[in-house]
Image (cartoon, rainbow, N blue to C red; front, side, top):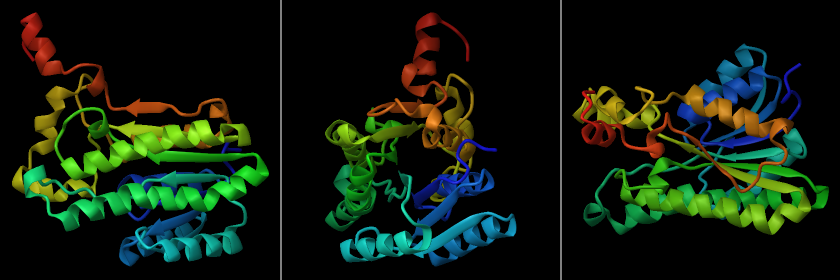
Length: 263
């Protein structure tokens, strides 16, 4: 039996990309998953694929920027699923504009969904976790929170998510609540479709920057998340678990230049 079988997990942004992969894998391993997604089409497709394979999942269309809707949704999840074990904050808005080209509306939307949405979800589960003396929160961060890689508003919002992890881990650790950040590098998902239109070779162009010679896949991030969901990680809290193919360890083109190596 899987070591996450029977666990009840909420995943935000679960309709596509990393969120979809996490939901599919968790259900395949016997978890019961509540999928939160703003797009009804991707939500429906992911739910259908899970049910087709015999998995147990529930779907909730939700705008994470709407506090009352968040409250109502988590109340419904409690009715449908019961007390949850794990919250995975994965939803985000990824705007690629330079800072001077970013409208206030775009800036606020990025913060609202990526950071405030995570805060609202955490706020809903904390009382239950504290009362039960056990709870597990996993935030999906990014290498963009650790260095400048573009996507300014998104990077700032995600940096806030990284700090949110530390705040929760320290303040609520005494209640048995743990909170960690998974830090992906470039992951080949649908979110890159628009960028790929302007540069269809974007993933190939990025490969030289990664010591392991490739960009990531949703599976790479899912493996780390499932480890954190499991009890094998029960003494890990407040950590940033980097899954980036070695990117943050050092920039390969610069290393090659200094060493006089040919790529």
